Length: 268
Image (cartoon, rainbow, N blue to C red; front, side):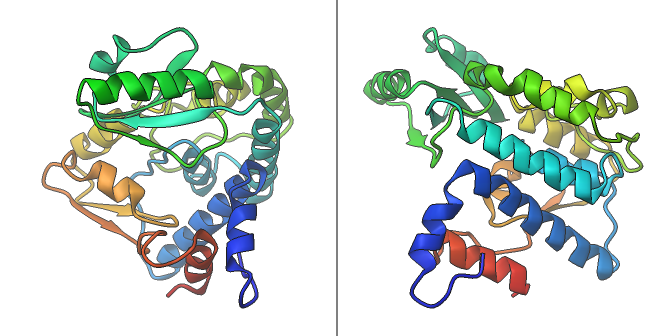
């Protein structure tokens, strides 16, 4: 996160490793959240995309910071040890996208009415991208070396569930959205180790989560608290009359990922 002069590219390459990416993103997001809290900004509700759900759960008192850090670090190590895979962002809704999927591909995230992510083996992703391009459907490869939120995660679900079972889990003290259902995270779900095992495999229901938060009527501002503005872009157009803002600039705007992390840590 704090590379020496001239070493930013090497640091960025290290941060591309899942075992380091996940705890780094958690640390930056949690630190930024604490800064907003120190400034007196209190959330009416918390919504996290995949890994971000751990930050939300930690802020809501489901996990202690120490346990959340240990779980996120383990989650990253387990995922990195899996077979390589790929992820593809597709400009289609989940229902329309389903007709294009072959065996071995899963909808990893539903980010909007016409924005989804597919995950699976490299060869299957390449074939899907080619077929969609031929039909004029816009796609974009994601910078991921693993097929998160797909069947390729199954081998680590039991091990991770067992690890979650070994730490204290409390009921949320703030409203938290479930990435699995897109509705409010219930106390029994938050305290169920099996939920967190399922969460790393299940489709991320981000669009439904935004609808849940906006529909609650208590959130006039959606604030992205993380290293970049990706979620701001996904939420815009789905937020109704709510204002959508981000804490930091885009991680790719003239900066390497490592440099963006330094910006986050320095609070610039």
